[in-house]
Length: 512
Image (cartoon, rainbow, N blue to C red; front, side, top):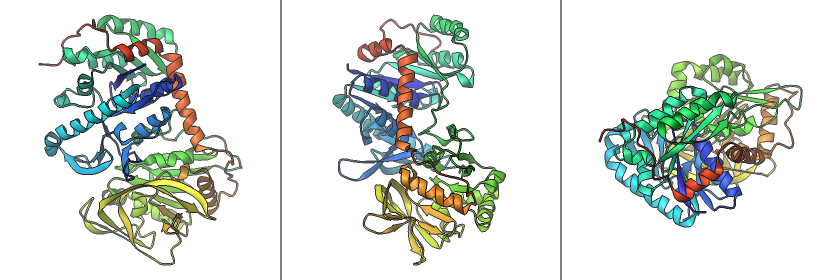
């Protein structure tokens, strides 16, 4: 089996990432050598990949998850262009894993040819190395204001001759109009690559849906390849924190007599909020992302997650009054955790001539440290130990570093060379490491510690929770959904043979 496929969507968060992962998992089970690809991703949730030269680079976290679905290690080529928004008007450009520039509306036109060339070259290399490459689009292919120069959706499909399926989220409503409209706004050459549709997140009697599917096929001349049911257990590795519900996952009942409530501050430029998903896999741990002062005040543990704009998000905490709530939480003797940008906010002072360019500002003053930003970005995998020399792993993505610290401060973690990382200061904890809580023993140690500090003496961690196993179950569930609810024989023909040659044009089409 050989070929390629583009999974496009009617909207952001329509289900492109999970459908791509599910198709990858299905093909991997079939013995196909398959790889994922997303030409351009706009997300602050990233993963670290060690490149051929030994240096760390960033790709979208969704592509790292899709690589796991394929049974392969992540590769920088799986997401050659990553845009990390730092504000509403600018994004850091990460090209093949390395931060190279800042993208604004003014620089987009000049940068786009370089980004497109890099993306096309990466896809070409992957298609030479793998039997099948399953590509994921971005946003919607019908964003006609962006069609000129597009290299992520139909521009990519046209350049590589990729058959395309469009997935729509029926839970949002209006899915038939969205699917028809997506097709009808494309020009004839783009429409010729749209082979059909997939309905996502369906709840109810499939029979009630059939008349709509039949009419969609009648007016577009294209089939629906399947209807994926709503699956409540698909919440790990969300590409965008805005996709989260109020409470992460479905927390199992506690092993002890008490629950542990964790409130994670949903910062405006939150980065790698997926760090807390590992906590949510533990029985008796209820994790919610929130901006509500009352929910922070009532929590046993408050978490300040990573941020792409540390100083700006710190100012937002003060403007909203959440900084005062966090300070009061600590003053009451209850635990606080800062991760990466959230860790930096806990400092006495932050010196930032790089990211915000605001110079020196006061931090929350909850840790006796100072943070200085360096133009060189630290991007690397991290391994070390905690407590009694037990192993822990993670990864680092940050410009800021600890430039001054109280010499008596206790590190939270230690590198393998013995150097300290992060801090423990009373009930306050901080680390630059992302992904550390995916290490089962460290997660259990930390939750046991903070539950005692919070006075939850009836809370007990489970001794058999495996985050790696939970992630693998998610990937298997995605593969099961594809195998059970999609026409995989038709998908196989599409991948191998490309779109049918007689697909009708649906007016009006994009203006020429």
